[in-house]
Amino acid sequence: MFYAKDLTPAAGSYTMDEPTSKYCIQVLRHELGDEVLMTDGRGGRYTTTITDDNRKKCIVQVKQYELMPPVKAPVRIAISFTKNTSRIEWFLEKATEIGMQMIIPLISQRTEKEKFRADRFESILVSAMLQSQQYYLPELTAPASFESLVQQPPSQQLFIAHCLPEQKRHLWQGMQPGKDSLLLIGPEGDFTPEEISLALAKGFQPVSLGDNRLRTETAGVVGCTMMNAVNVTAAGN
Image (cartoon, rainbow, N blue to C red; front, side, top):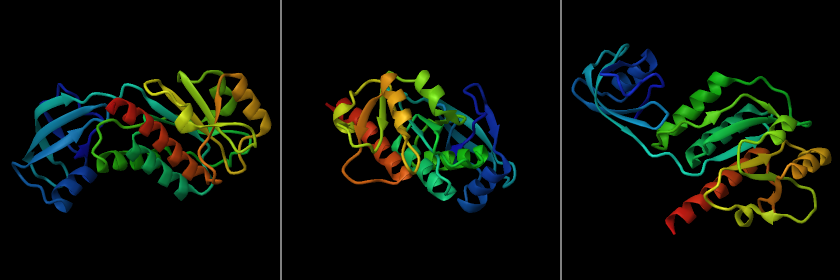
């Protein structure tokens, strides 16, 4: 499957960009007349046929368009990016494969300030979406401050995972399936007590991700997996 964010249902044909054309024709060895699937990352599934197998400007004819059903209850995660870029890139890949709908880079008091590499991060999301055979590209928002996000959270069901020794429900137990959900994951060193207090005052539920102390990116993957599993399990009942 190939990604084309500017492909629309009204298109009769489409010309792939050079990197995609090269991968399609030179690497995967597709040729004239082959059928290939494409997606616009917005749920569109395009069945196409190659009409020009030029490795720099491959042209396909759109034969069929189908809008794949979106998830009923979006799951979102706001996570403090780490200074080690490779670790956060690993998280972005896995969160996409798991099925997150929105990823929010969270700037808290203890967040290591690093350059936000939007183009690089988007290419990781696209690659992971295609590899996992999905048709919706997660939304990677601009970095958001902790205070602004907890003041106006984008979900109905709100959670904050932190390490302070207080009574917390396990995320698996605290989450109700079928509701938009947002989970906050803090930086190395955790959220400050003041940030935790603010989040709780704004309706966030304190949750645990297990007994072990997890790295930021590992906590993110565990949280994504749990939230997705709660909704999938409920949908299967």
